[in-house]
Image (cartoon, rainbow, N blue to C red; front, side, top):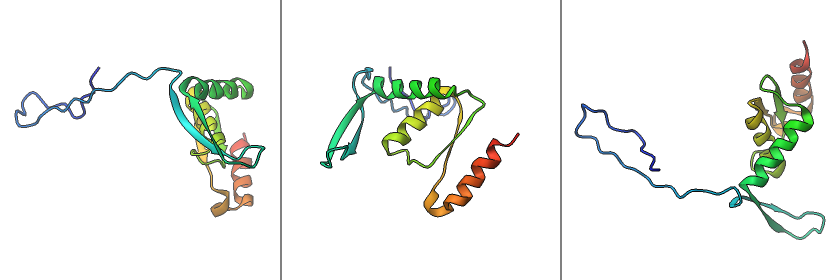
Length: 120
């Protein structure tokens, strides 16, 4: 199915529609590659499929009983393995994601933010 960005208005004959055809993506196709040294100390790339990425998010949703009303604070960048899983689990649950940068805010400020967020 073509995607048409900025479809022209019926009264605007000067605008042109530019459709972009996208190939379908299957659940077992590669979604991302994560580079790690793992336990061996040797760099290697790991390819995760769309199915694996969503499954890891669902596992965390069920493990933490995550709901749409929940807020998740994470120090992980979304470009890292844990960051992707954290992003996916909040997306699946409809929860809110609050990324924090400990290096710029400091551990004490991040812990205070977490304490205040947990207060009734």
